Length: 457
Image (cartoon, rainbow, N blue to C red; front, side, top):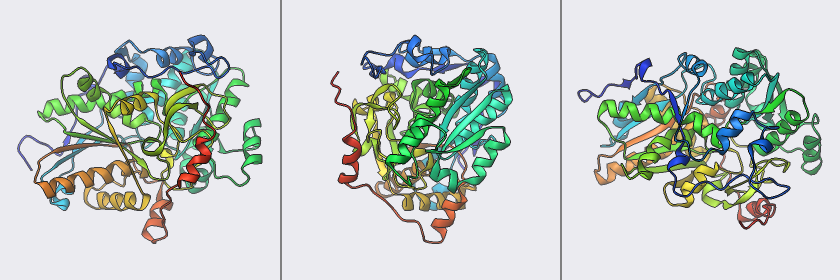
């Protein structure tokens, strides 16, 4: 090991961020506004408030405030598992025989097993502060649902979760963790909502999607007094809360005297990637430093790499606001693969705009290659990574091997969003050689694209 470069770098509790960072404040081209699907006018706080908590609606629409205070109650909760460690992957570097230096930010040091708790506690806090009875949500792999059930249990709120059907069946233990924390968990699409019934009638036997689950959760929230809907990714407010990941990473690198050259994150809706890169992207936007950012998505749900940059519905039932994003169409239902939380049809409006402006890159990877990287990482670094995180690991390894070919000593940094201990069915499929890759054809994607509304603003 090099001198003064420890295996793990922890910040002191006093160094934990006291404010969230809003990257929109430094973006020259702001993300396009959410539109009311009825009027096609920008949504207001008043229009969003029947769906979201009022304070969260304000955060969602705030493009100008660079730093927002983290309430003390949320800081006190964060102290149970934050700051999270920045880790130098010495063993992986050695196994790859690369001159590259590889670091990762590990967000799995909490019972939910992922970064999702950073926003779950914030959204539950604002719901409690508003005097609500409970919240509804969707979940894919189950990490967000687990995190929200924990946060709601802590604050005494009711929690209703619609879990994508294929994940509900593939990950029964994740489902049971949610129920242990008091959440009501329903496989989506279901016969418990009007939208669920409609989707099942149109797509009998469907394995579901995050877009389907969102529609059901929103329907229940808007038809049940004392409830609001909360979302674990995509939204501006979620990327704001997740900025604690990047802020801690930024401070830890400064403490080490190290500057990353390449920053890599998995991309589904954008919560992890946005939180990881936001403070570093802020430096780039202000002209203070330069970084190469890479978003990694599954080849089976390639929103960035094969999607269209357009206004689209955020949900399959078409009841949510319209967002301008890279999208495969709200009607796109991905294959029942093990990408879990990376199966959303669209991408964060913030990340979509940054990608459209050429400030970050995107690539897609197939799941067998992803699990090969996960296995290699687990064997040398001792952590079993979540399938979502393993997309970033795959590309980090690929970039490190490029450095081996060229002899360049680049510093590679990626987000390890969480652990994969509830994903053993996927690992079993890979270990047994039964895992296959699915890449949608242009004809498959055309079905989803056909449903994108024709809005030119």
